Image 1 (spheres, rainbow, N blue to C red):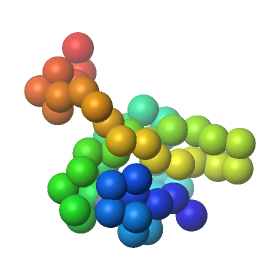
Image 2: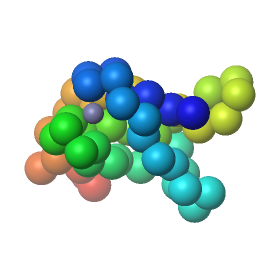
Image 3: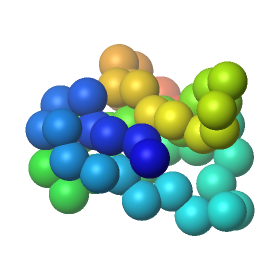
Image 4: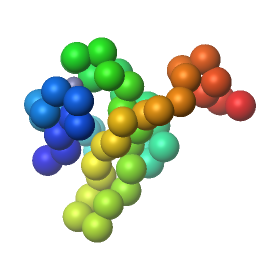
Length: 54
Ligand SMILES: [Zn+2]
């Protein structure tokens, strides 16, 4: 289970999430989906949403 690094609550990742996708968590943090050794996880996205897609 992935946990938000900001608020510590669960982040629900559906089967269709891909590494690199951005998720806005309930707390307002923007998280990036990353592939880990035991499946998908998340990390805090430190870029700007406005720059996404370049
Ligand atoms: Zn959160």
